[in-house]
Image 1 (cartoon, rainbow, N blue to C red):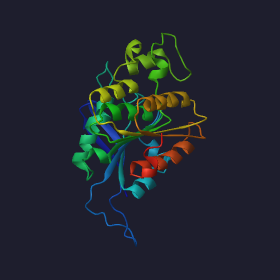
Image 2 (cartoon, rainbow, N blue to C red; image 1 turned 90 degrees about the horizontal axis):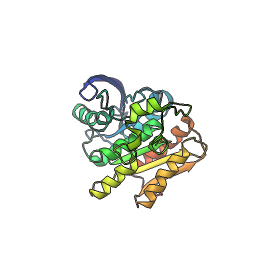
Image 3 (spheres, helix red, strand yellow; image 1 turned 90 degrees about the vertical axis):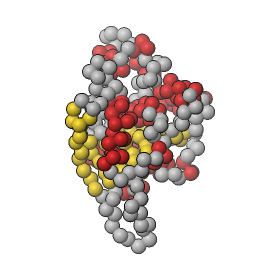
Image 4 (cartoon, rainbow, N blue to C red; image 1 turned 180 degrees about the vertical axis):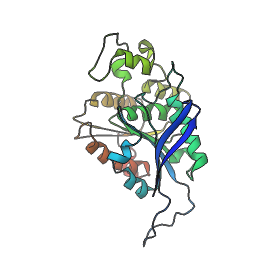
Length: 271
């Protein structure tokens, strides 16, 4: 297992960016283990949550073990509390960075598959929203989306007014990240709208895996998006089990999600 920190100049971000990466290339020889030398790796672009960093998944989860087990390269960029969206005022394009530029850079640099079906995006909380939004917005690149405890905030912050604060952040912050909040629903930051656009344009809909704990404060928005997908006839996996907004829950679900992403048919149509 090669574990590395990578820095490169991002045109989208207009500066050098840093990410962590796991590349299961140097696997030890063991009896019964398939020889996969020379085969391209599948790739997962894995996003962290609010107030986190590109070190979170390696520091707090079992992702290194899972990367090795499923032979998936994992790339973990920083989201800097910007919900992996393009910043309209500063012109730092976080969404395009994770949805296009990072995919292109890693494909040029590492022995990973260039196939959409082998390219996944995932995350938790803020990163779960980022995975849904960018997985749908750049659906030509991502075949699967893994969304854990997703902060699908357009449901909650559309049309809020100055003075609003939910105990985590206020109107000014949400306005700076999501833009004009009076037109948030129906924009390219609204997951429901992105699904509609893909359906209307006959685009390739990524397979979606969603999970949220029954004690999670974001359960309501996850249930709402799940109901929307079901009403629209979008096949997806949805798991609602005991758990809160914690690493205990995300560690459990990321293992299940990677079994699903690796093609375990028992998990593909559970919605």
